[in-house]
Length: 415
Ligand SMILES: *Cc1c(COP(=O)(O)O)cnc(C)c1O
Image 1 (cartoon, helix red, strand yellow):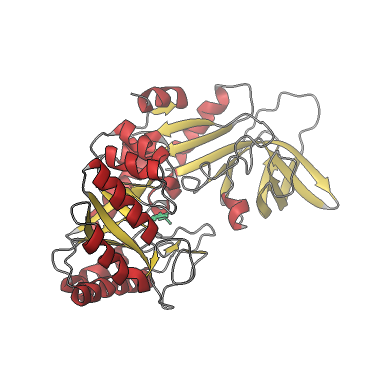
Image 2: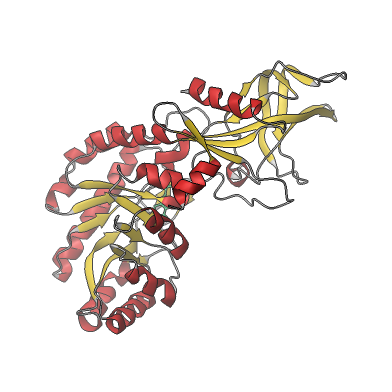
């Protein structure tokens, strides 16, 4: 795989006078990964893609034939999906949905709305009545349990702006019965309690907990649901340790007693990171190398304004070096040899650091640093215009090894 990626990066380098600064998304790799994940999944389970991990239109398009649908958290995201498909199922979640957003969600035929508060429920009922439409909903629940796994980003199990605490389930159902008849249809429940969990066993236990809760609510409140959305949060590692074991997770799911008890209920997953993280590469050329107070710094053309994940999480981002032999200048070429170097960006802030104390065999000005695992929450969470440097180019690897650049991608995305 790396060699295919490197071939394209070399083409990018040879095609321009400017230092390399580009994202490369391996669309065929994403598709192949999803294909493999689907092979392991039990019956009555479905995969949606949470586009906030990477809303690039080419990625949405590449995933369209493979996933059941997409999860969005704003009208902006919703329109990105609708531009690519007018009928693909969409799940619409996120806190603080405004009236106009709920109206547009109904107009764009969102499949399921994730209701995140009692006010939102009443707001939606009023809008659906006014529009004489029935809104299909899942109630997003924030469980009380301290048994939820702990990860870097915890979205539930404690105080949180996401969803309804489980104490409010009864009242929500009462509102739906008394005020929502003919306006909302409660299809089920939604949970998304954490992000980047790498423990497959813990994840399976958490899903059992969700399913047991749903069973208990069905019995207690005399309701019948047909969907449980168990969220995303399947982890990816950035330090070389093993990532999420999908085959183990799905085999545990197949054996789950809790799932058997909810016969006929569809179980949805809406991951973002695990589908795309490994298939994005951020390639940047070294523009300067210097020693300061005894430590070596390599400055790249790019940085955290394009890939904020390492600064956001405080981690060293994995990379490899692509050597460039050509040096056209009469003056000396700075280098780091068999030593440690900090890889930093071109911004005037000490936070612009991609990797501290990286051990390198040889790194020279003009070499290319390729940051791997840059497909999820990298470009999309970054402050692109801080300091006004040019944006990276975007390139895509598709099946059959041909690659397309961003101009063609733009045309394709705006079809
Ligand atoms: C962010 C988010 C996801 C995707 O999370 P990943 O950690 O990328 O899998 C899914 N559902 C909701 C509600 C989210 O907020």
